[in-house]
Length: 131
Image (cartoon, rainbow, N blue to C red; front, side, top):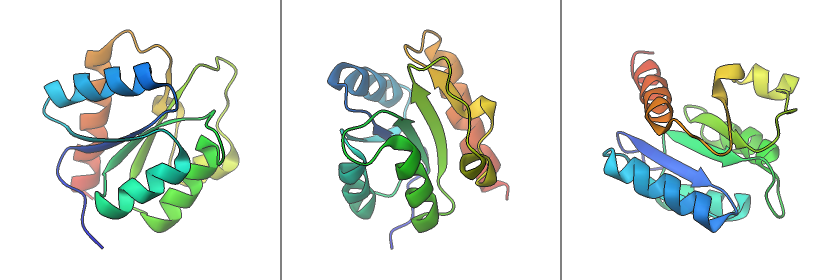
């Protein structure tokens, strides 16, 4: 299996405008970005281009974002995740907490402070390299 590239990010979101805007911004910030519009496509993308961080929408057609994160973590245990949701009521499940997600991994749509998202991704990637 291929190793993820440095600064590699997978965006899984079924909303084209959100997916595109995040991808363009992160590419401008020197991240290697791959995108998918569904969880199923996300798995196909990861087979070809492993990512160190996934930005995942929860409400996806087919397999939802929660299950994508759980299954992706099983297959790629070093991959870290940011939940990107429009739900202000979302609470982390015990399953997500067990794989290391905290409230800091939840970002509400729309992200208005993209520089803080860049910092969050960078911090996640730095912490995984120091382990």
